[in-house]
Amino acid sequence: MWKLLAQLNKNLIIALPIMMILGFIYGILLPTAFMKHLILPITFLMVYPMMVNLKVKKVLEGGDLKTQGFTQVINFLVIPFVALGLGLLFFENHPYMALGLVLTGLIPTSGMTISWTGLAKGNVEAAIKMTVIGLILGTLAAPLYLRFLMGTELDINTAAIIKQMALIVFLPFMAGFGTRQLLIKKLGMERFQKELAPRFPVLSLLGVLGIVFMAVALKAKMIAANPGLILYILVPLLIFYLLNYTVGTIVGKLFLPKGDSIALVYGSVMRNLSIALAIALNAFGPEGSTAALVVAVAFIIQVQSAVWYSKFIPRIYATETKATGKTLETAS
Image (cartoon, rainbow, N blue to C red; front, side, top):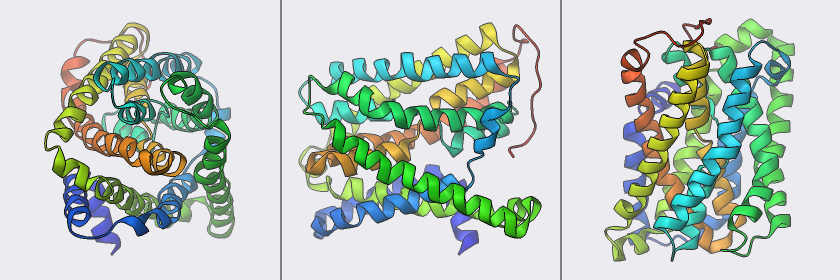
């Protein structure tokens, strides 16, 4: 089982479209009303394992303040507003689709940030800090941003969103942190890192695939009635990610050493789509599934784009960046 899940985790480019297709077929042929009772437990399955591997103490380590500063400025003062602009432009008459695009740009970083930074030989230590800082700041800021960005388009219940954030982020965060400390105390850091740490991301993958399946299944009849809907969603998402990569690359090359620049790109482009999906499905009622469909499509683009960007890194960084810095070879 673990080997199968590990293979799926390495082949998300294939696994995610397959789950979307299966979800579509299921939603056309079979009832989906019962799925609303599964959303919260599957959300917990998705979020809790990723929290176990979160290295909170890394935030307290200094040494890359400029890198972290640039990353968070992009993450919270640029990307959400780019998402809002594209959402209002392309989904003017579909506010919940615009909400899906805003959610895509709202919460930065995921485990993919660390993985891709490592594979691209970037500064993994900086990427770990970005992941923790981005998750904490994004979770705290999400209710306020949603109210500010979408309050004129939708009736945003801030209290309900805060409650859902507590259930789908802070509760798994505390449970994951407690689990990590308990396992390290019992097994030791080396054994934990070697034997158990690699298993948690693949457990999280089960939740991701389940949520993507449900997001598409719940909107299958809508997709069938509008065959061009996926293409309609793809266009603004492609523009969103292209702009995101462009901003991160330019800022990184101008102001940071190569390793930090790579971390900045993946720390700003890799959005936490798992939590975005969870918010869409848990905090916005039946219409939230429309927003969730946009986020589900974003999953495919995000994974695919990370692969392609890594292939172009030797060309992008063919000349040395403004400063020199440490580049780590592997993810921790």
